[in-house]
Length: 261
Image 1 (cartoon, rainbow, N blue to C red):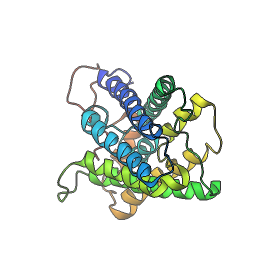
Image 2 (image 1 turned 90 degrees about the vertical axis):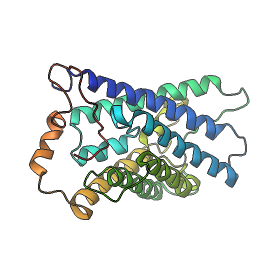
Image 3 (image 1 turned 45 degrees about the horizontal axis):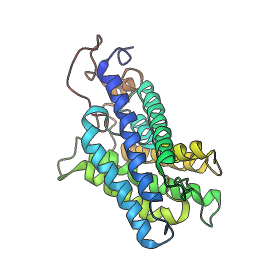
């Protein structure tokens, strides 16, 4: 109820919706804007577009919602006990709505001779192999998000949004030839919904979501454990981080859910 009554909470949800709409529009238009989609230079172009879009939007919206813009990242933050279950659910709903809205816009503005919409598809591999590729590509992304926003670190210099954007770019360079590179279930959902093409769609949910969970567990319990405040972190799952929201929804300092508590 504390989050539900907060204006900051709903602004954060709106930021995820707006951010996801812009992200999908920018990235999908880049992906389908060249008819030579099988050429290596097109893969680099698409990878850069996805990475730069995430870096730009993370810089623009990070102080409002944390700019998750990815259900796998949101799930990783949930497993890391940095956001509440309610916020995770609302973020994922907003992300899926934003992806569907942007995909519909791209569908409406694409040239008449272009039938593509960036639907992810397996390229000569089995669904099991696709899950593995999506899992590992997403793992490195969520691990990067959690690591570069860890407040305990003093060695991180430069831009965290840029580092996350480069991680997205890297994931695409690695996986785009095999799975089309989902690493973001909402990104895969929008085009599939608009074209009603859900062939092997489960791969683009199971792989990334498992990758996000695994990244959070690896970082928080093995690589950089945070056991001393574990009871307090568990409370976050129910009511969110203490101090982020006022009970009456009054104005307060912005919360950044990408930052470790």
